[in-house]
Image (cartoon, rainbow, N blue to C red; front, side, top):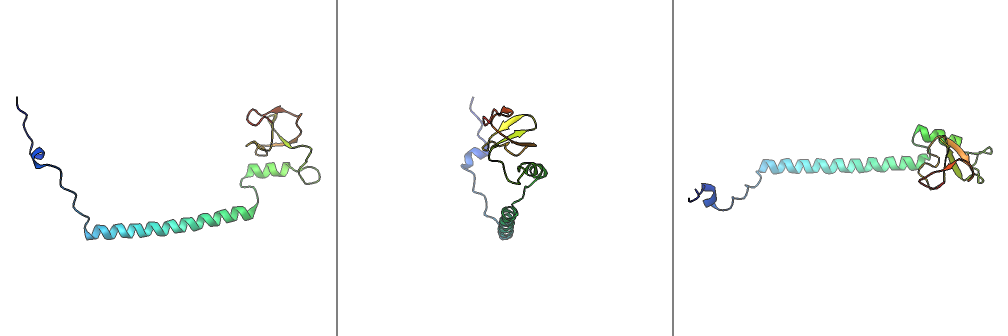
Length: 121
């Protein structure tokens, strides 16, 4: 049984879309200009925020502020004899650990607490 041929099959490939009208081109140019301006403003804001963080030198949240206050030894400096951080849960973290001085705790030596499974404390 022969197949019926649709009118679209005989027409060949579809005709290319018509180019954008003048009004659409203007709208696209306006949108592109607005996006460039917004992008520049965001870049400047980002640079300002980075400068503020660098100049501030203070902790960025309340948890780290509490930890930094607890970290110094009796003389106000870090204790070189206690290069580890003992978290409230009893885990010992070394200076390369992501939890070092990031949790509530205190400086400690290598014999205190249980070694962290991530850093080996």
